[in-house]
Length: 436
Ligand code: ADP
Ligand code: ASP
Ligand code: MG
Image: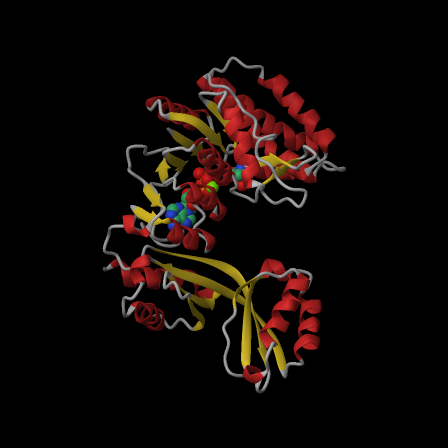
């Protein structure tokens, strides 16, 4: 049995939803379907989730009704196009009332997935099962995986087939809580794990996981098979075909993921398997991914290396300030911490002041404009020359490397470059390995 998740582009309009219906109907083992809110129909379009966030911002004194009416029209058009026999106007009026009453950002955003699932359930004539009472979050907003699995198992044991909305669940008091953006991938993975699916199919708008971001590298190679660990590294580092947290529920249950293209269903896609021993292929690297938007905090102090507890003091300050760090390269008299810019917003001055106090450093400076690029692949393990190839590729393009980190798993090599070199650097590394 399979669990399928269809992303925003697959649910964008009547035409794409007909493709979704065809895919679901073609194989009787596709019993449980999780959907995203309608996404963009073209580059200039707006995702329903973004339109709903804008509605929420307009709730207090803004043009809420004007913004909501665009969403209203979009769902009516979808139902018209599909010739659906449901009273979508009444449903949308109800949703509008609920948004006004709830006055909650997460509730408002969740209505995209809710409506998408109601519509697909009607179109397929399959029961709609709401995830609100099934995907459970703690009062702190953490996913309660075991609870969610138990609840989903109980609910779905009564439904041979179901369409479920992605992206949200509820807090203990019943209030709707969403995952972070792209979170329907996580909902699909939880459902797959709950029902013990043979495979979790994640349907999107590309033929599978590509060895680099297709918006940066022209026609990157398709990756046929990836391990969960490789996927986690690539997704975390920016290849957001799949939400990085979608891996955990299925990995625990040993369920493979198949990334598939709704608009080219005959393509095999990418299969993600739990164990690296399943891997074939001779390519040295699986893929390259990266992100912009990091800063380096450099801390210098003479004799730092012999000062016991120095790193702990630095890390305590980060913890107190609620700042998560990505890497911490160190030298004899210097230690650097690499953090996402979003963590520094509004707290950089107090963070730096606390670091001065805690470390009594000789110097602290912050450099922004850093991008990180990860070159990932199990086949790099124990193979000589991979790092050399990356550095050669960057040197030939005169790209300065500002940081290097290789994890002890040898699964990836991460380099930091200036953000203005980011696209150039990804292309340089890609071409170096694409000749393998
Ligand atoms: P969905 O709405 O179906 O969840 P997403 O937009 O979240 O789809 O993810 C698919 C998109 O991810 C692709 O259209 C592509 O532009 C982008 N992408 C970024 N990196 C990669 C990669 N390495 N391989 C494939 N797609 C990638
Ligand atoms: N609709 C949500 C978003 O745009 C969740 C998802 O598509 O996975 O982020
Ligand atoms: Mg997505």
